[in-house]
Amino acid sequence: MNTRTVLLILQEPQDLNTYGSFLRDRGYETRMCASPGEGINILETESVSLVIVGQDTPTFEGRQVLEYSLRLHPEVPVVVVARILDIHSYLEAMELGASDYLEWPDPEDLAWTIDTQLLRAAVA
Image (tube, rainbow, N blue to C red; front, top):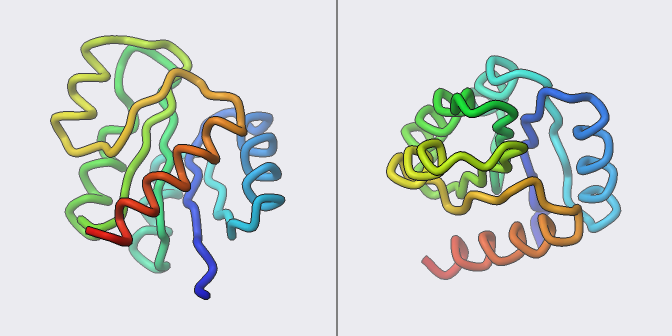
């Protein structure tokens, strides 16, 4: 079975470490980035199974990553995790093609979402 690789793009180092450690413990290979630019570089050079991008403010700063990822790898699900739930950012992300949009989930809920999105992508 192929290792499932999650690209985790979150600005806060503590959040990266918390989610990244949990996902690694669940068997995911996890690539962690602290900026959208780093995430885009990985999307250009590596194969990933799922992308998680953070939204820390009402402005949807992950838009560039979402658009680029879906243009480059339309089959790879992109999940947005939002520290601040904003209906406009939610609608924008979903209209752009995000697979899911979560208000800052606990790691267990995020893992469940990842499992679900990867299963959907595998049967699509």
